[in-house]
Image 1 (cartoon, rainbow, N blue to C red):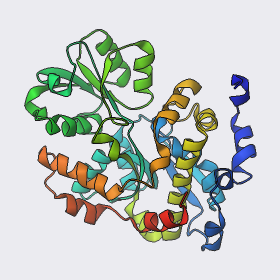
Image 2: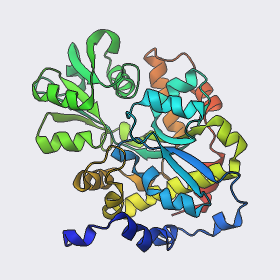
Image 3: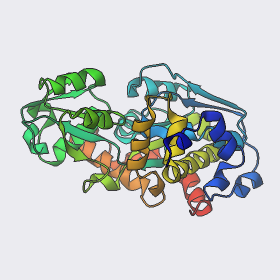
Length: 342
């Protein structure tokens, strides 16, 4: 196809699909939403920062407006994209909803943070890149790994991965805390041995031929069957606004289908949002991540898997069942799976 034909600007995309009914555009009918009571609030605040893999929350903008939210705010768009800040914003009520990495959420639920997991968003997006001295995960013993924050996100995913193959993350690994751009430089200079990244970092590393992939959570056995990113909300918002909550989840799940079915047009809409800087990397990410499979996987099994692994690694004391009982609410998702059969 002619590249210029795909260069839809934001207004053109919204006029050609969303305004006319983007749900109908991808084969999803809006009638159930119209038959429901109106949302209890017209205002929804979504976290504005995020990587390319969280594309559905940006693609969902017009779907959310179609659900009746006239005051839609993407807050903290210019703030650092760090889980610690984002989780604080969500738990304090500064934001109402976010798409967040599951291990981070398990840690917060252990602390009884007032958040609740509502649905799985997508499986598979993180990749572990390593230097020449590392050919397999077990080769990371006595090596140096870069993460952005000790105790969160990449650190937690890596604790799960390393523990699963019999390594002790506390004793066998030297951890350094640096930004992603600094980690890229250090890996290229062979001053660190590995970095675990989320889009667009893996795509950038491949483009620059830095390191090689040791683990790909989209394709490698075990990891590809579990959600890595979840729809999460402020607990008090969900309690006070059940109709609005269901409408938000519906819009986000429909946005998953939009990303899966029209990655080219969705990528064009994403440019300039979150960590998305260019069309080509956005398109590559949207093509690689299986957004359309949210119906096929069990989010509770994903919570159980990561809670068990974090428990085995000594990072939480609560049992997986306690985390599930206290920190998840699947009633909206169960209703929407019947409604949005695909």
